[in-house]
Amino acid sequence: NAGVTQTPKFRVLKTGQSMTLLCAQDMNHEYMYWYRQDPGMGLRLIHYSVGEGTTAKGEVPDGYNVSRLKKQNFLLGLESAAPSQTSVYFCASSLLGQPNQPQHFGDGTRLSIL
Amino acid sequence: GNSVTQMEGPVTLSEEAFLTINCTYTATGYPSLFWYVQYPGEGLQLLLKATKADDKGSNKGFEATYRKETTSFHLEKGSVQVSDSAVYFCALSIRYGGSQGNLIFGKGTKLSVKP
Image (cartoon, rainbow over all chains, first blue to last red; front, top):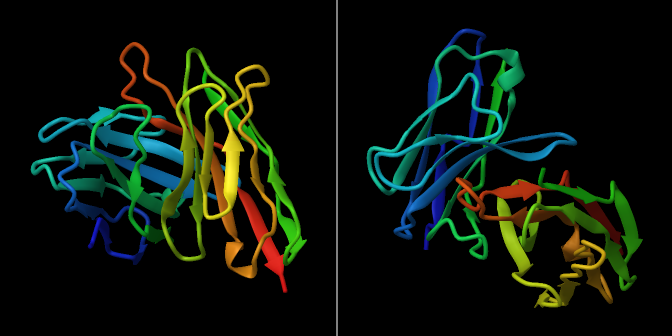
């Protein structure tokens, strides 16, 4: 009963390095989301996808790229990491993007940029 | 625009105390409202939801009523337990124009329950 799985769980990068965060869901959900969580800020939407092969910008997309090549996977990339991107990143999915449907969250990736 | 405001924490209570966490919202339309809970080291879990005015969501002894007239969705529990210690997020979701029903979160309220 995996649900939404995020890898890695922790990572430390140096400024300027690149990396990719992987999100995988096994619920056959159409919609997937990437959020970042910062102290006192709640969760803010970075990018989202409404289906395989589609992506769209959220509230704070700058410095990130995403891809949804397979329905079950949603990748978040940092091309040139900056200290301001130190955060906890959460992936979520939902069956459809209907307002009354809840989102299912992974356990998060804690990313530190030195 | 759309936004959620919830009471700032941290909130510290003794076991069996009554809990209220206030949440108010601003929305251009008719949102669905949610409470999510985040236990230490984990992701967010849906606690309860309400999709229209006067609906009451409930789960695990928690409840919240969608009040359109006061644009509120306050979370309550009659008797908290130590295991309820977590961060609670109020959120709304609304679909209009090109929006895809994305969630808009409050900043979260940390609850600590002491034995």
